[in-house]
Image 1: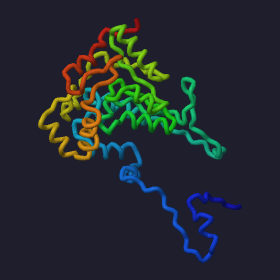
Image 2: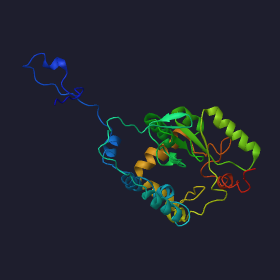
Image 3: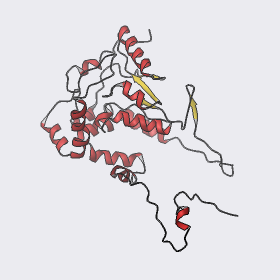
Image 4: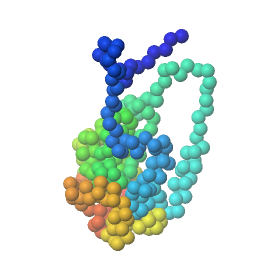
Length: 275
């Protein structure tokens, strides 16, 4: 039996032309501080622990929590935990693939990135980061219906992106929004129908998160005590792009995150039905 190895990282041929020449070490591209930090994160739970330290408490409370007392959230996790793999031994696994076909497109894996609202507050231009990462991995990424970045930018950044729509209960607005999504190049539209009324998110209240965001001493203190987030995400966004808005509620730009009209924009779906 013989063994072979990839020699891409070994000494180049020119270095062995003269046996007396000292060995030449090949330097790998330097890793960024972010890459080095990510190397120690081995699971989603690891990411959550780091996010809890990086994000201000109100922001982390929003993304990590759910509605009411988190019962549905906890039940969903428990149900998912009941899935298991049944091993089959002594079968040929030398040629294996996770590829799957969905809606006429082949993806590299049978899972993707779920919609994540206001992700541009968790990381700088977060929706674009997710879209590019999903495209690089060839998996679907669903842009939330409540992002702070224009859907056209996200569609351009990632060709595997889908769009999640919170449809208003007004036919002309529905038509205009869907036409905008189609013009942007999204091939898959995800309709979310489980939020006809404003959710009671007790976790948000405890964490100090409100919609719209209300400038308070507590919120300011949370930002100051998380300087990496404050400088790298929030202030960077303000300086380069201005106050974040809900960009894609309708065919036109929505309200800024501090506006009292935000709640109205997300609560006009009470009469939406199959007809």
